Length: 523
Image (cartoon, rainbow, N blue to C red):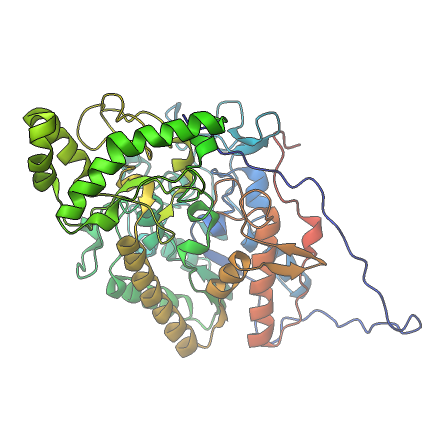
């Protein structure tokens, strides 16, 4: 009933030449120096952002363009030493474990369908084929703060059970080591640390399918999509920085953005149901469909919910404006029993009980809801027994997600869940800034940067970067991780913070030299 949303690819950019007001003047070249820092041994700790993850995968070209690799290249002009990265085996992305695919290939923009698609091919990066370190780039996709100090996080034997991380297992110096230990053994003179995003992001990207573990100080009991307790985060972060600076090393750290600045949460609208969409392109069919939906579903639901003081959950569909989708909101009082009783006289006990179970916590979405990016392919699709939330595939006409059947928890981050993520993020950021100031470290405010990208954009090298999906230039096709140009923007922000703190004179990179997206085939 509903067509897939199409993403437009930005096919051209305008470049504005810079004019020199005084053609006879020659700019004074400032020599590149390290200032009070020493870049002779640089190590980078972090998660997928440090690793160079992009387009839903980790691959060689993305790793080469990670913000930490760009930084390392800039450091070489100011006394920086070698910087070793645990490169994957190909530019396809994805992972194998014992020959079995455990992570798929990267995305690219397929022009013929005007949408993202997975690169064809089978990954060749085998987790059990250990690469020899130590490595300077210790960015580990999926890592949360406490994972950096967890022994065994790089144990290949634990990957299949989820007890270890496959990316770290490829290059950990020993099965029982930690990410922090592999950093400290190199005796760094300078470090970067950007960690904590996954402590809330996995909860957010799952649509809130997880537990807010605030108050639980034992991360060993956490699930993969849980929110880390802020006190656990503060303790781990303090330990990381204390150990990294113990021998006099200087460094740069960064705080965390709000998830609602990422295109993963802002691309799919909460209200895509126009008459034309509901009519599969036909306005007349859509208007007839809306009339039928109002008479057979939305009207009776609104009438019953109004009787229970919850009439604001559902409104009749309009033929003239875009309508919001139906969603399940687990924060609402469950009115299943009341709806069952109300519908029993007209529908019979069994059918009424079914309607009650489906719509007891249903409402129409609002602008405060964040519909996650993968949901775009679910809208209008038939729920299955595994994703309906009731253990069965609902029959027609209640078989269209978002239209006649509520989108489930995994599809939408509702306001109560958004608030939980924000509270945790604010707490983490407070700890990061306090510890950074106490240790005299350079500080990058990525929260401000991401907010700027999502509210007008950032102008650099005479063009504008925004967080718009596909066309904005700052984010890759997974909607979370930066594009090549986005990573360069981040690297420049780190460079600026380092220069400001340590009086170094590192040069920023020219963003126009970095593409917006990677092509299907990377040479």
